[in-house]
Image 1 (cartoon, helix red, strand yellow):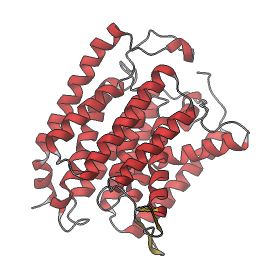
Image 2 (spheres, one colour; image 1 turned 180 degrees about the vertical axis):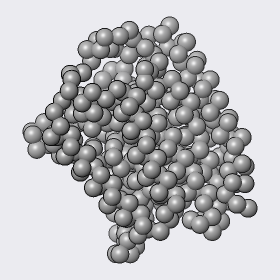
Image 3 (spheres, rainbow, N blue to C red; image 1 turned 120 degrees about the vertical axis):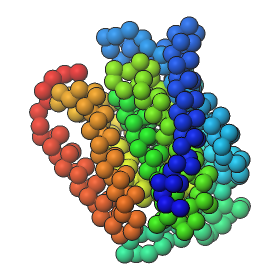
Image 4 (cartoon, rainbow, N blue to C red; image 1 turned 60 degrees about the vertical axis):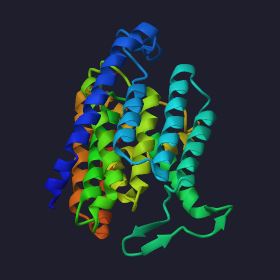
Length: 352
């Protein structure tokens, strides 16, 4: 069976997830204004009317139903659902009450530990030219200490990368579409897995989150008609982080697809830290904000990000050799360095 026949087998699940996500988003757009779940544009000095917020609720509920419908509830899947529930609820409370950053980080830490507890763990990584590095030892109280630490750091990093990315509507949902499809294609790729059928659960979840994000993107693309908030951005980040380490590990692939946002977050955190500011305190100096300052329209920023993510996502599917992927990672870092240098020296054209 070739890859196109395998994709056809998943078409019904993709359509179900897309339509369910579409239905929930449309319901949210009607119901949220009536119950006060709207954004606060004046808080960010935006000159427009409030629009429905907390759209992540719709995506999370659609995700729960679709996964329950198509994926066997094994231990890792249960851990994913429990952890994503914690993240979604915390994100909603943060959107509504503006939680203390330490409370958010603690909830993220707990959710990542739940993944580990249910068997979603990075036990080793394959570094080109160096070989496989194992994190299986030492073991303390039933937890592989290094594996647990590496997994928690990875999950919290990707989760917050997606949260930082939520500065322009359409970025989060668009990048999730590409990341989800990339992980789906790798999961069913005969050249990657000798038995793609064993990856059916991972492939299905990746396809579900991608299709739900696509349904949201239809209303999230600038100018947005609904916003996902931290409820959605952190939820999407958590699911992508978990999928990257589900059954065999695709951390390098996720790094390629999310490379620009990850490197942007690293740069922002270092800049804030060395300037004496709390690294969790938001500002308008991310890459996407800088592009807006240069005169790019929001839709142009979204398309630029998605184009880069798509190119590196496609390379991850085509270049299955780990050494080839390492060269793509190097190319990604060089691209980010060139972008950063250009944006520093090019003067601003307008104020947002």
